Length: 192
Image 1: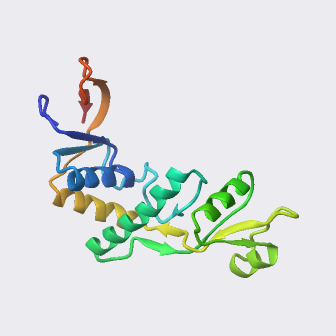
Image 2 (image 1 turned 30 degrees about the horizontal axis):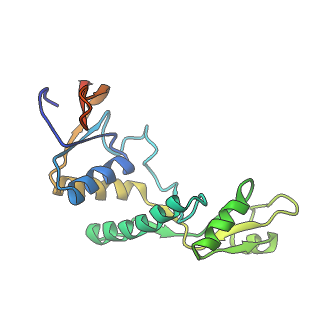
């Protein structure tokens, strides 16, 4: 990335979240956007590869998290339509352990689909998964696996289509905010 270049939004990291952020900034804010990825988009060292990423509407009972989860579901549908291939595969999500009462309260408060499962229910859907004795689990039927490799390709394409400047092989090494209280900052160093 050349020194002295100015952009409205600088995104550091080219994983699913970084690419989505860059795409959304370019679409909704109509601003100039650049994205820095220290290696290459889709590299094996990041967490945005393979099919092992889960998406659930409510992983936490916090109202703002649930609202963002619902909005993100709509965004995933738009992304799938733009890409022309499924990016999510609905599998359901099963959870148990500490914090489940708070999760259940959040699911009920937002009227989100869920069921309480005992071990026989778990056995039918997930053979081999054993709950601790006397513990029930919460099943969210709309939980899904993210096809991360496809999602990276889709979001990189959408970001490029919106004129996001994607710089691979550039690591942000230091950043600082503007000194005079303005919004924004300055990338002090980047390495290839």
